Amino acid sequence: MKKINLKDDQLQLYKRENSKVWQIKLKLPRQKAIRKSSGSKILEEAKKTALNKYNEILITKKQKFDISKNYNYKKIHLVESKKLNKKEIECFLNESEKYIRFNKKNIKKFNLLEGRSIFNLFFEDSTRTRTSFEVAAKRLGADLINVALKDSSINKGETLLDTMTTINSMSPDVLIIRHPEEGISKKISKTVKACVINAGDGSHEHPTQALLDALTIKKKFKKFKGLKIAICGDIKHSRVARSNIEILSTLGCYINVIGPKSLIPKDIQKLGINIFHNMKNGLKKCDIVMMLRIQKERIVGIHMPNEKEYFKKFGLDYKKLAYAKKNAFVMHPGPMNRGVEIDSELADDITRSLIQEQVTMGVAVRMACLEILINNRDKYGN
Ligand code: NCD
View 1 (cartoon, rainbow, N blue to C red):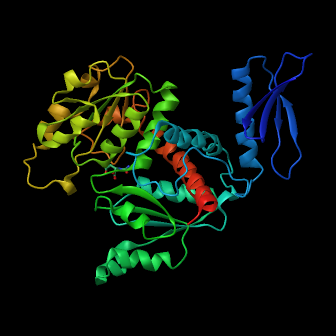
View 2 (view 1 turned 90 degrees about the vertical axis):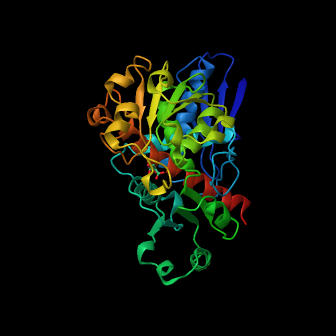
View 3 (view 1 turned 90 degrees about the horizontal axis):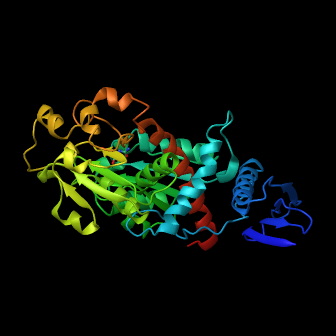
């Protein structure tokens, strides 16, 4: 009999001498083994069916966390994309897959994180990211606390670290932090016991945005290697650009950045990307065009072109999109400024724009992040 282990001892494929078709054996701790035909003679196909079955069972049987998995990502914080290797990125993307399917169900509730306290600490405005984490946490059964920082003691002169120490004393499991200061999430991760997720630190990083962008691309293209991606606009002040450059180049994509000289930092070249100051050249042969908002709130001391002028040169419309590959797709992390960096009709054109898909993928990626980090904390602890 041929036997192949897929998930430690929990998932196996086997084939008896007298049979051509691969059989699946699924044995979760303290549960009866389930045996099922994969319906396929081809090993790769059988593997896919087996893994799908495994993921389905994991989320329908309400598995508890004590059946902890061995993820390729071993850390309890997610504060930057820079240090993620390919296996770690793939770990987040692979674990997100089951949640894409789960989020399409009528009943979107599963008690994987029941009893866990997750705090949203947003010191900057946010709609998508904050809500996305809230939806993700609640669908996994956790308690999500939105700390109203506008009404918080920060306004009474309390230091950020004091606020964090206070919240730390409430025994949180995860802190999701957005703050204008670069590197602040990393700093906080060293002082608290909870898992820390960086939901955007100034112009520095926004790792879950880049992961959800990667997941959106994976769903469309089924690969990363060799894809050519243009990131356009205010690269200098964009944490989304920085995190995407790190993650997408690690996955094997080529990156062009396009924008006015004043909005492209000189040191970005060392990240191994191509720089353009003109859309026609920069978009050539691109599979994806990722547009960015001008981060007005972070721009100091440089002359900004007026919006009409900017749109003419760097705003994406159908005409400029035609410089890219024939079926190129458009992405944007939101919030969009219609008529400034992107044409309104193009943004809404679902045959070309993946913008809404990005939001959908965002919930799945964040569910996977919460699962992985909390599971790692239970296992490796602190
Ligand atoms: C971005 C952010 O806040 O960094 N948005 C987001 O998270 N979806 C981009 C932006 O603000 O322009």
